[in-house]
Length: 148
Image (cartoon, rainbow, N blue to C red; front, side, top):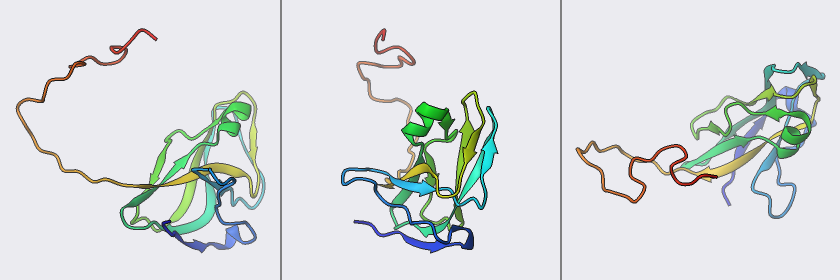
C-alpha cells in the first residue's frame, strides 16, 4: 500500500486526515479546511482549501474526484474532474468546486467536499509515423459505435 507523507497546515488543525469510509472504498474523503462557512451562489465556483500538503509516491498521482451525493443532492461538481495532483507538487491541495445547482451552497468546515484516489501513472513517449494500424472502428468518431 503506497504511503502519502502529509503536512497539516494551521487552518486544518483539528480536522481528520483523509481516510477511506469503507473497506472497499476507492477514494479517501477530502475535507474543507475553511475557517467559517462560505456560500457559493448558483453558477459560482471557488477553490476550497484542504489545509494539506502532500508528497505523492514516485510513479503515482492523486486524482481529485467529485462526491456523488453532493452532485445529486446539490448540483456540486468539480469542473476539472478528475483533477490530477502530480508527484512533484508540494503546495496545498485545493479543490475547485462549482455550484451547478439552482440554490446557494454553503461549504462548512470539515465538510467532505471531494474524494482522492491514488493511482499509478504510466509514462509514454511519442513516435511519429506515416500510417496507423487498421481497426474495425477506423476513423469513426462520436456516436460511431452505436445508436444509444
